[in-house]
Length: 301
Image (cartoon, rainbow, N blue to C red; front, side):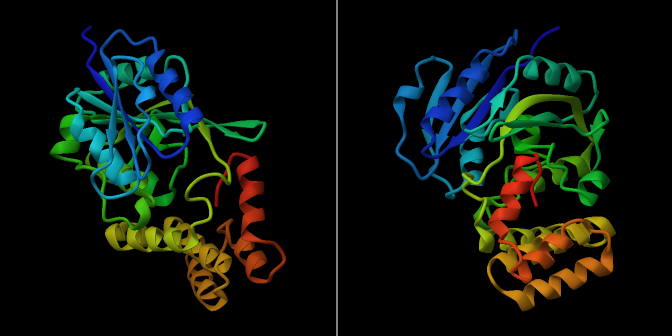
């Protein structure tokens, strides 16, 4: 078989040690085809030393500040047949690329692939997989499906340029830009999924987005406006409403939190995030503590 060329976009901001590990894990993939890496420095001084391999290019994000602009800067700079993403604090595991390319080529018409993840938080690692070989639009409406993570994405570059579209840079703070992209892809065709943990993903309070509550809420409201099918799906709507309620609770805006919590309860009274919202609104626990506990078990809010 002919192995298509793959370009990997790695957005980064002031995490040199983690970045080096991420790039090394990409370059040591046992992939017979061509691999190139575009490291895009976003709102940070570029480190030319990372380009110690001729397969690595160092770029500066000259588009919208944030993940969305940085990803697009890399996509447009590459000329490969396939494009993959990897966040600067994540690491591809051995066999990731070969497994996904095989699965993608074995599915006629497929444009987009994902895989399972191994969530690393502190000293714990928890495997997160989908449980099936493809991810559909309906599944992504009902659940964000955190295991369909941006660092697992492998996409036909031609589809990003004409079809699925580039990463949307109008999302507030680039929040949920990966979910938006996956939804647009899955609406066209199911996402091919290699259901094994092939990317080590870091979840902790050190994320640039872990406590940016105003931006989180704005991003979720944007998602509801851009994807009205979410609100038409009971469990999916309840999940997003509860996340917005949790964000408002962490900001100390109790009335707004309660309004969204009521909306969530009306759509799905079993929504598992509601007890956390109630606890934070009541002052029984802080939102930061809730997140730390969830992260330690490989989950988010």
